[in-house]
Amino acid sequence: MGLDYIRSNTGKPWKKRWNGGLDRLKRPTLFDLSITETSHSVTVELAPGTRLNLGDTCIVERGSDDFAVTKGLHPVGRIRNPSSEISAAVIAGKGFIEARVTHLGLFGDTAEVNFE
Image (cartoon, rainbow, N blue to C red; front, side, top):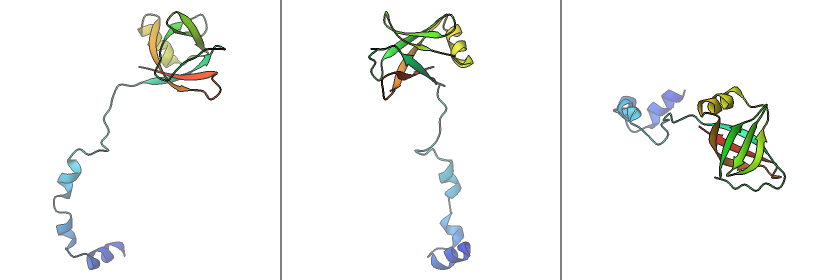
């Protein structure tokens, strides 16, 4: 029913309406996806009294069983039970990686950091 309705109620025949439509579909548009670098996010348990802002840069360092997160020379939190992706990134970075704060927890006890 839909195709018959369109053909009977439009001013142009159906074939003329899609003339060049395939070429228009091949052109890049606003919604084309492009693959960029992969980035990973992880939740950090912040130490009491720690103040972080969105966009702050932190360093994630290898610890004994978890990873320490520092801002400058000051420890700000820990990553408990790190995933294999985080461990591989820290090993590839010779023991530490740089991470950027992307989200802060509502109560100020957690933060989400993003690293590449």
